[in-house]
Image (cartoon, rainbow, N blue to C red; front, side):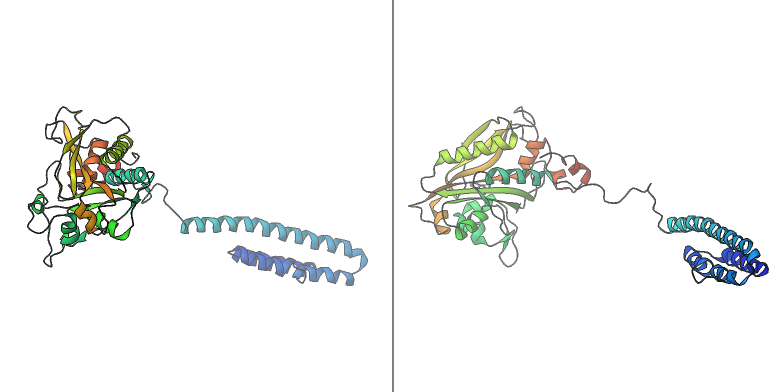
Length: 343
Ligand code: PHE
């Protein structure tokens, strides 16, 4: 039996040496130490050997069993380490690399003031409407009381398409869509891009943003207009802003006004943005012209209303102290990120 056991020990040692993974080790364990394994076979043979040799043979088998177990455990530890290192090699990541896209995006200053205004007006019961950039002459001019050949068409240099459509020059188009789709009482605002064939300078660009507003109900007067404008400006600038109302001509309102605020950039002293006058023309407003109400299928003998339209780029410049409109539209992300936490 002793010689046979030595043979088993040898074959175990050889098999162990060539086992290269933990799965193989399990198979070895079954083969040598399992219930039906080699050593159990020797145990069963014990009953056939003389009594005086039984104890020594049993001890020998047990010692071998323990030794096999120990060797298997040691080898398992070694192989686990090797397997772990292999896994580390294959799943390697370089934690020193600057991970891509970890910078949170930020809203454009114009979007920030637009969202702010939307919240202010929504809290006062206004509904936010959208409208198309490409319009017909009807929505951009005729329905707004500017018939063909009216000199007011020249006030806003217009980009026309060959088929007669145009890029809207003002968000006032949204007033007409709003009146067509809603029944009075109406409280709407319409923010969006507008386009004019303008020469670019510190305060003009051919594409800019406006926000239109309109309120229609019975007995609406200029005092309602002034109240909503004051509330809105106080909320947006979070301070007392000096306001000046001047008579102004817009074909779609009567009476019409221009609302100026004292230039917040130069504190009214005069700079390139306010063209050295200390005041910035912020918005046009007035009482909706009866012809415009009629164009929107609203009876001017029952209803009246006010409307206003303002430039959001100019408002953003005032609010964030930006002195030139061009970087606002330049797509320079470093410039935009300065306003990431502002609201
Ligand atoms: N649409 C006018 C503009 O672009 C602004 C305005 C809107 C004026 C509503 C009066 C009423 O200049």
